[in-house]
Amino acid sequence: MEKLRIGTLVSGGNAPSVISQILPYGFESFSITFWQTTGDVDLKELAEKVNEQLEGKDAIISCLSVFGNPLTGHGDNADTLASWERLIDHAHLFGTDLVTGFTGRIVDRPIEESIPKFKEVFGELAKRAADKGVRLAFENCDMGGDWYKGDWNIAHNPTAWEMMFDALPVDNIGLEWEPCHQMVSLIDPIPQLRKWVDMVFHVHGKDATIAWDIVREYGVHGPKEYVWHRTPGFGDTNWADIITILRQADYKGTIDIEGFHDPVYKGELEMTGQVHGLNYLKFCRGGDFVPNPV
Image (tube, one colour):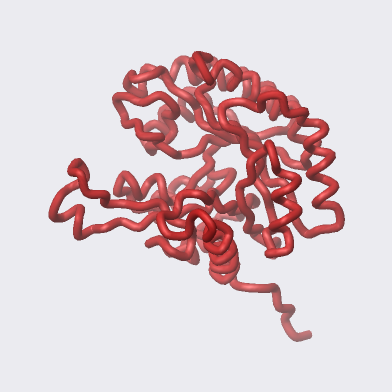
């Protein structure tokens, strides 16, 4: 059985340095990310440096990502759409066929009002990507928004997914899914993944802990926190179930840990938590391959 690789997210600006330092801990894939823009990064040069670090190692680049609002082009998002285009054009240099990020949205308007612009922008991006053998996937984070308002992303709710994929029914767009963002909305991620798994191109390794005692006593609109983003191994999700569902659907992607969110394993404990999450996910995967007796 082909290995379901477990890796982590690394920032595009210092990816070669970070990869060289953490490869010895056993990460098998790396998702290279940018915030709103690729900026002045020379992607060809970055690919060369990253590939130097991976040469001879059992690790890959799983995807390239830019997280911003490509639908508006306003302010700090002025370069987000062009960054999607650059990543699509350079993905092959990194040995990946996947580019991911937020859909964007029309700021502070209901999700349905963003669908025509989503179809226009990502219709063109999907064509550009298809011509280069590239797939696109949308992260499922609400970024503090809801159905009626927000300024980053519409792809955080399964009803929105239905609207998106109905509006743009092409084979090379899908989801960059993680259980955490659904749990923040009190959605059970397991049946959701079972239903949507064929649309999942990439999985972010991030979990959540829900304080149901607080939900039951104070609800979700009071001053008390009721949910925390967690590194896998410290949250509520059964990742063995997630991996089982992915395996049963013949998932070909990776699970890459999205760090820097855990309320406990942070600061100087960041990589302690991530390496624990790495080993935990490998355990849920079934450990190392063992050949059957002849």
